[in-house]
Image 1 (cartoon, one colour):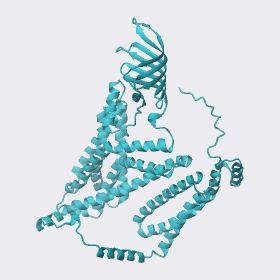
Image 2: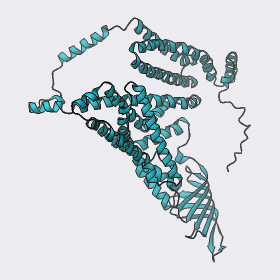
Image 3: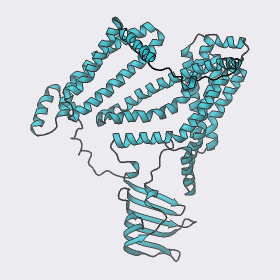
Image 4: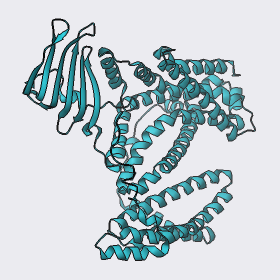
Length: 540
């Protein structure tokens, strides 16, 4: 156990933001008193203006939301989703602008009143402009002048054939056949990609909102620069979309076949002799290609993106040292099956170890030798040990002790073996995780949970194809009158069932109740069989 020596009462009188606890009438006098003492008082003036600017922001949001509500009502149900997405974008934008300007005010780069009131002024102007556009309309004269300018520029430029529109002489009959071939497949893929794009967009907005709610308090407390906040979202978003892509594929497949069924397009295709299996081929092929692309992305770009996101959150925003440079204490390290290191304190910056204990045992786990050193420092020539003892075991049970003040020893381990920090499985690729598992097995460690994660990296990319296969028959057996609500309900039920089976199998494997390979593929096998059975029994 590591017991903290600091008294819990020592920091009780230190408040991180004391200006928040002051009443409005006390902010000004307290700021003037501290300014007379030569202290920085910008936080008090920022807090004073925030007491007024944030309530006014409610009126500003009403002015911005009023025209959005009118436009969404005019567009019907489709416009509500656009209005919701626009509302979330406005809230996120206001927060980012407000936080950035507040940080600049606290650092003294701009006056506090300007940094706090400028976001309200910007969004107030945007709200008034939207109200004017909604009630009066937007003048279109400038649009006509723009198109006229484009026509003038085109007439004065020499006509040059584009590379992809060059004159290629082909068989007219062949070109007509090529233009009409796979027209249904192109239509299905175009609609499918449209649903996928909408799903990814909605997923990105939901992730940004949820992540912002989780990190809002930390950002307000630390006040990182705007570029760091932007990098946080940029590098966190790809991993979140990758994890949610199977659900997006599932919802897009359900919506596609629901729309085909409700518009009787599927019935028309069947009447024309096109079976359900033929209609499903482009969707399943596209889902298979998506699985291949997801696996390639998982092995190439995703580990680096996740590592970069972790570095931004830990180092840039929180101000911590990189993990491989952080001091660690009370460490045990097993380099081989018969060699154990115990370190009281490991300092990667100084490349040193305090209170080193090195134990050597034989194959029967009997002690062979013991090395104690007050300090060990890594150099290119070896380990420099100071103030310690060499204690080999002699005559079976007796131990000899040889003291030393300074000793240079060459050992197979170097400082990199200790400072290399183990990364999480989601940050490692399949090749890296497999090498780490082999290292654990060679040194005698338990690697069961890592083997499960290793096989999961093989099974997870194929979930996109399985989701598409399962979604098609479920979308066909749903009632026609349900619409998108039924599609969303079907997608939720399927996704919850899949992840429930998947995580239960992984839990059984980590408890040594299932083989890791079988656990990683259980959900895929179960839902692939379910989808294939329902798909083959569907009316074609």
